[in-house]
Image 1 (cartoon, one colour):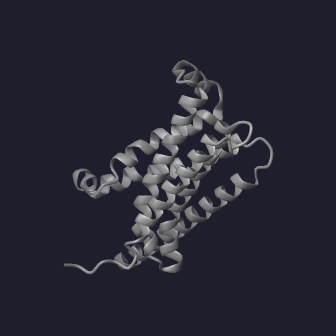
Image 2 (cartoon, rainbow, N blue to C red):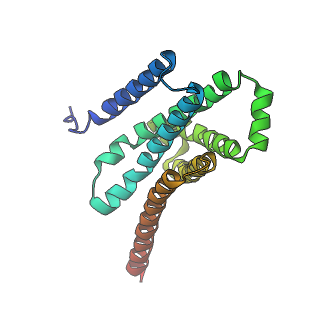
Image 3 (cartoon, helix red, strand yellow):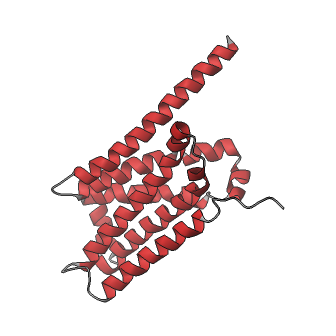
Length: 205
């Protein structure tokens, strides 16, 4: 039997922390601890948590490329799935308690309000990524196809950051910080890709 990884505790710990956060949020809603507009506050907190998890997911590869750290790659799938489930809860809270399951009203909001349209598109693009996150899905699709599909996560991240930016009405410092982290990660990936291409050309020459 293969030895258990010393990082095996990370994924369960992250899931536990996520569940505790949701329970705490639910408790604060039930006890009227979220201020005068608890649904709006809960929506904001869930949306921010989804963005944090998504950015953390995308930081795994840049951390490996710059610092040589491989442990973030072990929890990348967990972070990605939690980002999806949090975004889904964010939407369900908006659809149900906030809009009273008025599907026509929600569709009208999506058409009329850009920040909702952008967020909804990000959620839709997350669905195939979550659905194909298992090892069985990789085998079924083959790795090259699976890899191309999961590059959608870059578009999702940009849309999520844009959704946050458009949602904030005054101080855009926080949205810009998340956008900067994403941009830095994309730049690191691009540099690593260019180095890899040049090395391959050098070998062929």
